Length: 239
Image 1 (cartoon, one colour):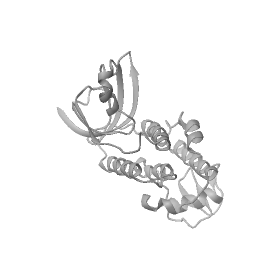
Image 2 (cartoon, rainbow, N blue to C red):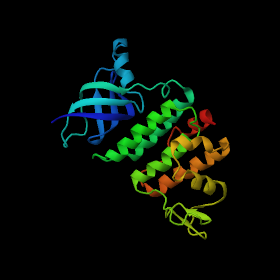
Image 3 (tube, rainbow, N blue to C red):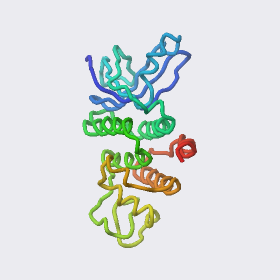
Image 4 (tube, rainbow, N blue to C red):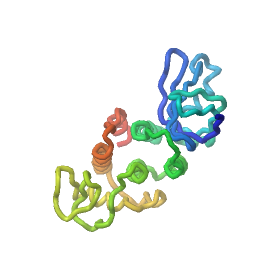
């Protein structure tokens, strides 16, 4: 079946001497991997290689069948040309970091229109906006809505948040609880829109502490999740 779908590039891996394996999150079929033959063969293919930068938004035409694990692309074009995501050093660091997390967490080969729309619209916002220092924190927090463990805000006024249960509590239970500055920041971020991120003022140390907490939250709720390899580089560049 010939399928035309929008797609977001999650990862790319060199295969043999001249090929790439590109993992995408597609609007129609969820996670799909493609073998791009000969794309690294010569300088003439530089334009084609540029299509597959991390988190690029594409439109792809390919023959789809549920029985295959690796596909070839018949046609590809750019859906949106970013103005800053791949050229701004800080934003490109965020792109590398988030793409690694998305590549690890998004595994389903099925359509999820709401999740695709979330990724598409937030990346466009990130590309256009200049107040982005806390973007990755809100992006990851909101991503948990689509992964099934968004914090339960029923008792949001309580003094602790239990990372294992994903809820607010009035006393310490279990091993993984947060309070203090991380709790205050969590409450401030819950329900906030990206356009209001400029109102969140924190320093690099607090930002890194909250990020470590979010990554632990992912690890507790996703058995396959591992700390991204790019985290150390990301912290060095971004902070």
